Image (cartoon, rainbow, N blue to C red; front, top):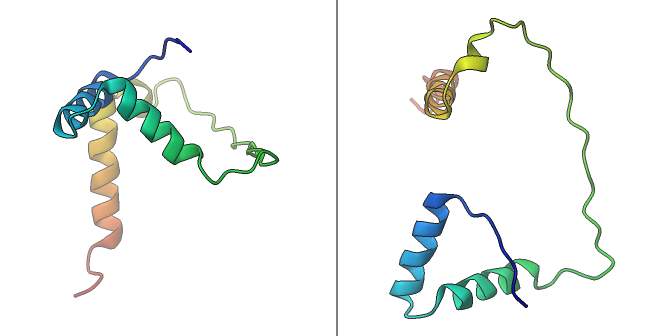
Length: 88
């Protein structure tokens, strides 16, 4: 079956690199990955949807204007400060 799938550029580049390393086609790699992900699932298995809480932010909240890289850096900074002093 032929289909079209949008894949983020970085994931596509990584997959192409892996397919070259494994000496297989992109199609073979994608098929193997899907088989691996789907194997063992029963036909009666239905994924449950979880409702996420709503968050209302003020219009001038800094997070609304941050680029993904800045958000990731802030997450790392908060994670480091949360764990500062543990294990010492």
